[in-house]
Length: 347
Image (cartoon, rainbow, N blue to C red; front, side, top):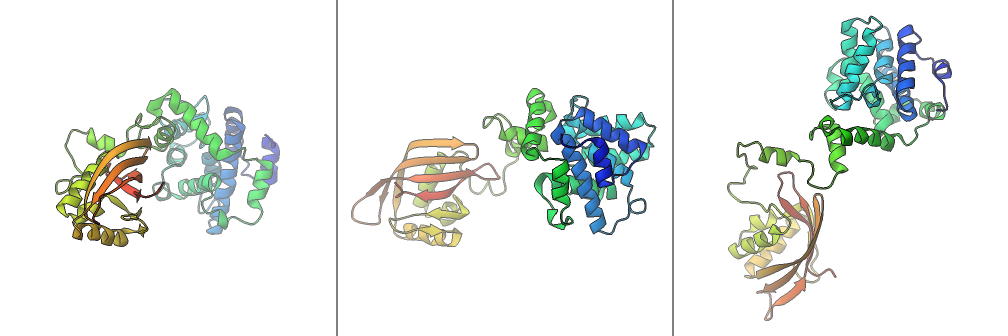
């Protein structure tokens, strides 16, 4: 680490109390350098956001608590804080226990607890008071650059000089994943740690929201599912397309494409977007076209699949047209699949 706690306090004029010094020392001792640097920068950016809103320390918010909440917000990624809950809640509990050793009032501890437990909860933290809102704002600025344009000129450069980033975003992701891989119950599927874990495990090993709904036992189905079934695998798109085409079901055919999809119904005809695709499909129906599709190969990675069918199209000319399709399809929010690109003539 480039900086030491002493020159950080002096250089940035941090709130200098027994509690802030103790909290800073605890974070510096217990967390990795990239976490500590991030935690202090988060306070600097939170304080800058407060000033931009004309909020006054001691009057509009408790500056001591803001510093403590920021500097301890990732203590759940330390050895001390690695319990059996998601890291944000483990961190909040660890910070609360630390503050009780300094006889901090329970109402003030509750503010720090909320700030730490909710720092990844978009839309909730801003409703829990000024300190909680400012802490999340500063943390978000340092992680994903949210509201960075409102920082004073030179502050970020100064902070990064004394408190280097050390590839923070990816380093922090790795730290969360290290805990979650060792204790998967710390990363429930709908949580921020759970989403990181799902992205780093083989497809299908962690349930999606649709998987959870399907396993609830209540038999819930997506809106409209009773009127028109949807393909539940990439391969099933072929069956649905041929069925809807034979039935002259234009809406059914269109449902097999994303709104901004690309479709090539005949050689040289490149359609993009729902309106153009609808007219292209209408032309196939009006011509009495019929189609057979036989799967040749498929490659699937997560919610995206690349597949190819042997297609034989009749009804558009005197002779059948046979080609090998190139199709890119994607899983939809309701768990069904739809085309992103459908080009039978791309080779």
